[in-house]
Each structure stands twice: as C-alpha cells, then as structure tokens.
Length: 260
Figure (spheres, rainbow, N blue to C red):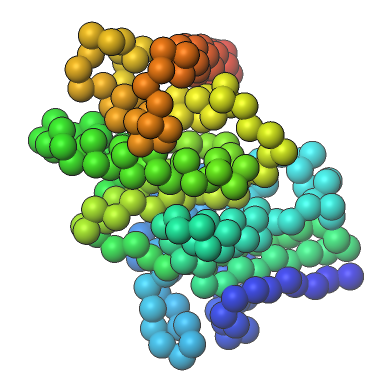
C-alpha cells in the first residue's frame, strides 16, 4: 500500500515527483546549504502558478530504528511544518511553511520534504556574534531577541532540542528567525535546570558567566529571558554551561575514536 500525506499549497504532480529525488534536488538547486543525511537547498519552483525562490528540506534516515518505528510517527517534514505553524501563531519568526509531503509504503515513511519561504539576505547568528567587525550593541540586540524567542517556546512548554547559534538567521532588517524545528518536543514540565541547559547550548561566551566579565552575552540572554539577576539563577546557568562543555568534549572524543 502506497500513499502520500500532504498539507499546504498543492504543487503540480511533476514538481512533487522531482522533489522526491535527492539527485534532482542537488542537480537543480540554485544553492545547496546542506548535503548530508538531510538536504537543504534553494530552488526555483512554481507555487500557485508563479515562479518563486523557495527552500526545500528533504529528510533522510539517520538510523534503522527510526525507520522501523516510522509507522507510528509523523515524518520529520510534517513535524517541521506543524511546529512552524505553532511558533508563528505564538509570535515567533520562522520561515513560513508552504507545503509538506510525506510518502509512505505500508505505513513506513519514505520520501518526506518540506517547502518553505526563502529568507533573503541573511547571516547566521553565529557569524554575526563571532564577527569582530560587528558592534557589541548589535550583538546584544540579537542575543536579546534570541532570549525572547526561547522564552516564548518555553512558555508553551516546548523545547527546541537543537539550540545553536547556527539555527538562527538574521536578515538585513535585523529580524531573527529560528530554523531546524523537527526535534522540538512538548514537555509536561520544564525545570529551570532544563531551561538553562537549552540556553547554555548557544555557547555565547567562554567565561562561565563570571561576574568580572562586563560584556558577557549570557548576561544579556538571561536578562531578556527571565529578567532575573538572582545568584541562584546564575549558578544554575553556570552548571548548565559546564555540563554543555563536557557534552561537547565527549562528542569530540567519540568522533576522534571513530576516525582512529
């Protein structure tokens, strides 16, 4: 039994068939942003009869277990579509979803992809924050907007699960967009430890939130996120930063062992 699940704008049948092919996406892309397990590419497609520059994210499989369990799951493309609509409804900027397709075979997820609006003239927040030529004030403004975004996500009891500065886009008008939403999850309860750990993953500063560091961007983040300057919150954040640093070291060690 073969079938597809679709939401959003209906694309013509030939376009849909083309987008089911990783090879077609790569060979026809204006720009390929990512080409690993998933493919993220800019393409020119007909949407509602008009040529439009869009971004397509085609999801591959990271492991066999996920494929085996896929009859009981939404596709990652569908999760991205649903989370995009949720965040937009809560005043959080994300690339607007245009269409999502999931193809299933006997219930098992096959090709699945999402078509999204293209954010023009953007830079990754990571590039801006680490650019020595950017003013400190602009960096603080961006970090405060990131803090606002994360606060709103946590207020609706969700976690992003992959917060990095590389998952925030900053356009020419200084608007900040959050991307890579397929790992988002709703939590029954969010502890302050869990919240601080999400924030710590941004790796904004190497100072461990020291009082002596006057221009620490973690301070800007926390003030926007909670408005709380208490020693207790700062200590929770310091622990989260140390935990995140250990996690990163462990991942580097695992990658090194695989290469040996």
